[in-house]
Image (cartoon, rainbow, N blue to C red; front, side, top):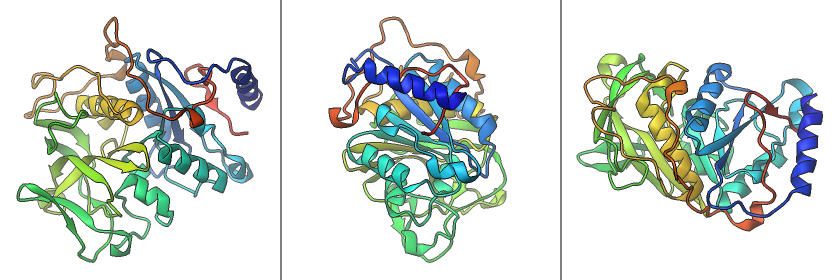
Length: 331
C-alpha cells in the first residue's frame, strides 16, 4: 500500500514540477533509518518532531527494508535539501550510495546523528563526508583522532582503536567556534542531558571544523581528552553537520540537542541560521534543560527561509509532503 502511495505522489511531483523552491518554502529533510545498534524506532519520531514543530522543516522518512527488498532501497535523495542519517547497518546499495555522494558533492546538505558515524567504515566517500567515525574496526589507518588541547584543535595520529565511550552522564558542552552560525547566539557553555559521550573518534577529518567539545572524564570511563561533540565538514559544494549527541529519545529531549540539531540542519541546507539566540537561562551550564518536542515553539510570524544554495541540477520537482508517520517507500 505504501509503495503504491509513494509511486502515486511521485507521479504527482512530475506533473507539478516547478523547478527550485522559493525562499519561503520549508527546508526539505529526508531521514534515513531502518538499521541501527540504537533504537531508531524511538529516536526517528523525536528527530522528526524536533525539526517539524519549528515550522521551518518538512520531514520525510525513508526506512531501509529487511531481507531481499534491501537491494531495491533507493530513496529519492535529489528531492531533498538535507539528508539526515539515523542509520547504522548494512551498506546501502550502490545506486543509493552514488546518489548520496552526488547530493552532497553538488551542494546538498547532510546531517549525521550519533551512531550514524559508526556506519560504513570502508566506504571512502562516506568517511570523508562525516569527517570522524567510530567502531567498525576503525584504526589509525582510517585517519587521526581530533582533540582540543591547550586552546587549539589538534590532529593526533597515535595508533589505537576508533570509537569508545564511558558511562552515560550529563556533561558540559563548550563552544570552540563562537562565530560559526550554528553556535553563534548560544551560551559558551551549557549542560547536556544524560547521554553517551563519544571519544576516540577518528577519520580523514578533511575540511572539518570543531564547533564544540566536551571533557571525556576518566572517572566516567572516558579518554581524558576534550572530545569533539559538534562539527561541520565541507565536501565538494556541500555542507555537513555532525553531532555525536543523541543516544536515545531521552537525551534528544535535551534543549541543547534540539537547538543545535535545528540550527545545524538549517545551516547544512542554506549556509545560514535564522533561529533566534538562546539565553543562558534557557540553556544553563549548571543543570541540563529538558523539553518535550511537542512543546517546541513554531518559528515567529514572518519567518522566511533563506534562499537555498543547492544547484538546480539536483533540485527537480518539489516532493509532495508525506503525512506524519508515513514512510517513503523505495522503488
